[in-house]
Length: 71
Image (cartoon, rainbow, N blue to C red):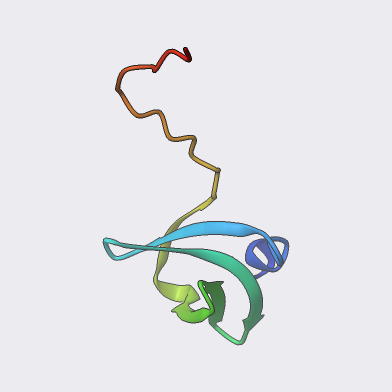
């Protein structure tokens, strides 16, 4: 797992740990701790507790509604 996460340095990922999902940019992997940065905050994740890892993808917002016509 450590080598896999080190290959994601600088990338946005999401990890699931015991029912909680955390996302952010991988800044460092040190010991058994994964460092994820998002919105100027750093999350410290215990690598041994990670169940799933996936790369974050930009979600395009499609909101329902009416289109306005220009006059």
